[in-house]
Length: 446
Image (cartoon, rainbow, N blue to C red; front, side):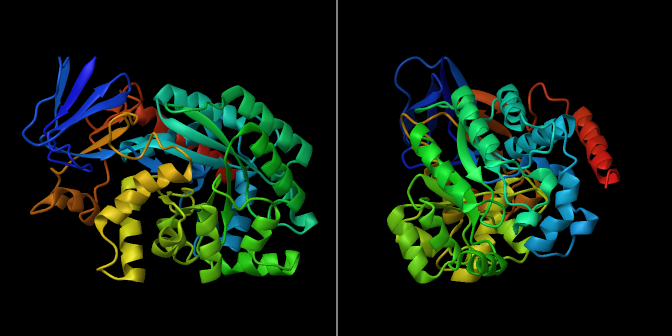
């Protein structure tokens, strides 16, 4: 079956003015201005009312946090007290609550044009040992491409860390489950739909030994590493007090400074540290909305890219960003980086690059993130027919400047996973009601 996405209103690719041809889950041709596709076309999708983008890639999220958006006890707090307010709620997480949280997060991402999502799950209360398996099941049902990062915490309050005892695990349990998940779910090579990465939560919630052993395990199995780093000045102070060094020095001492690693946030780096990160090729996931809500700071995205670090985009947890909408995160990144760096230095295409090619580089997926021959057929199509776009000029710029928030059609691996602004087979009203009950139940259990 050859599908021609024909005559788009605009497309984020050179030489594709008349669209793309999709075949066997990949892009088989770009159709330039004044040209026709070669060979027989089986189906045509008229795209003259659509802006066509590579599928957006979310490189940092916490799906379970959709249960605690705008949580009263956590409002108006910085990261550490915010976490302390929410850990007791998350300690009550069970399978039913997690399943609805995952479905909500994935659906919201897909409807915003996302085709690949990385989730960082690190809370494993008693009875929820198979949390990542649940996430894999739901991703397969919806057709979303995913990287599930097996998070971990083994440094609780009694050991000098931040999380309570009820949500941490011991090192042996963490490493054994990490290896089990890789063996059971991790797919390799171009076109992989489900991948596993290993992700100790942060310097203030895991031991140095776990960081080092996780790096060894990742190298053994050829999977990537992910963690939070340099998110707040409080983290800098914690590392200096606990380890006698700054977070990046600690990371390097644990064997983590490499191009097989991507870090969430990456705000508080010195110029010398940015140079080191770039030389290593370590990726950074920019989380602009979360960083603004928690007043953590601004990721130095242009400096990181100049140094050689890929910069991707993430919505972060829905308890800090209070949203899982990736196209809105593109606009947030555009505005925040323009404020920090100047109007002449940040364009709408920079922000779109973070969410596409930059994110693909962070997770080590050269088959994703651009519209080119041979790449995976992961595509997001947006209409410009809402009031917010009235009077618009440049269609690509309008997506970002005018604040697009919902895709019309989304394709992953050549399969439509969103059509006409809806997810086929998903009863959204039922999901929202079930999720509401689960969130209320967790809040009452405090």
